[in-house]
Image 1 (tube, helix red, strand yellow):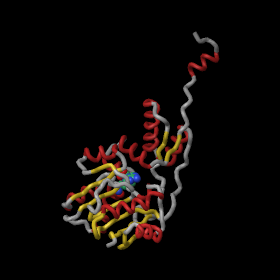
Image 2 (cartoon, rainbow, N blue to C red; image 1 turned 45 degrees about the horizontal axis):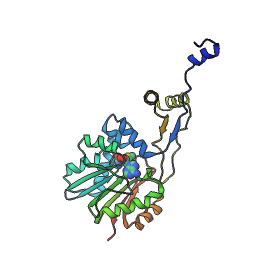
Image 3 (cartoon, rainbow, N blue to C red; image 1 turned 90 degrees about the horizontal axis):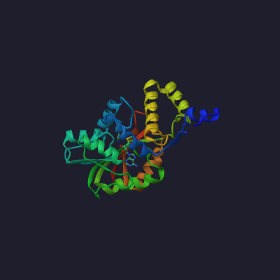
Image 4 (cartoon, rainbow, N blue to C red; image 1 turned 180 degrees about the vertical axis):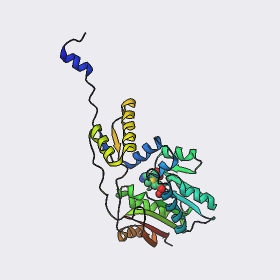
Amino acid sequence: MLSSPDSARICTMPAAQPKITHSDDYVEYCRETARHVRNLHDLALRGRNKEEITRQIHERIVEAVGLEPGDDLVDIGCGDGTLLRMAERIGTESAIGLLATAEEVAVAQRSGFNVRQGFTDQLPIADESASVVVCNNVLLIVPREKIAGSLREMYRIAKHHARIFVGEIPFVPNPDADPKFETRRETLSYLYRTYGLRTWFGMLRRMAYWTVAGKPAVILDGSRISFYAMPEEFIGMAKEAGLDLVRYWQHEHPNTRNNYLFRKAS
Ligand SMILES: C[S@@+](CC[C@H](N)C(=O)[O-])C[C@H]1O[C@@H](n2cnc3c(N)ncnc32)[C@H](O)[C@@H]1O
């Protein structure tokens, strides 16, 4: 039986909690979001209570590409399926959405959407099959070295003269990111001070899950921008892939990004 003061301390001291590590792996962030999804709009990864902004953004995309009943739409990184739902209302010939992970696909399929898993630089879509290609708020989280390949994939799946909308390309680098703390106490205290009780409680629940499920303490950062470009550079990259610029304009929410409309070059 243990009886010395030292051994008593060994029995009663709480086990040291492992240090928190931080990851910028956006695909893992998408997977994690889908695993803990509370409502479908979480898949848009725009934050809570932003449904109205997501709706407005997609209404403007519908207008910009002139989506019509005869169109075959591919929405790369379709989030919560808002655009697919609009396409259904318009009565497009077909509408398919792509998502980064099988977990997101499962959630979207439960809501009745026609979705598949696929990455921007390896689209599981046949050559020249889309009259409209949309990729909104996606390339900014794709590593820079995959951007040229992603634009070439858009060209490959586009029909002759297809309209190609690539939205929310930042023209400035990453905004100030949250500090990365190693301990749970510092993390929780920062979240409470900066974002309030709801965010604090969400993180507390996640920490409890790590402990109960024996999972590593990893915080996935969903706010890091991997790719940004000034218009001249991005238009040049698209041109190289065979996409001709129709026009570009500043995005509204947030206004540090641009939207681009291209046509497949003849
Ligand atoms: C920020 S959400 C944008 C959703 C939607 N387009 C919108 O504007 O509301 C990013 C989407 O891109 C997808 N995604 C993330 N990384 C991707 C990649 N490498 N290739 C294709 N899709 C990706 C995610 O599955 C998610 O649906």
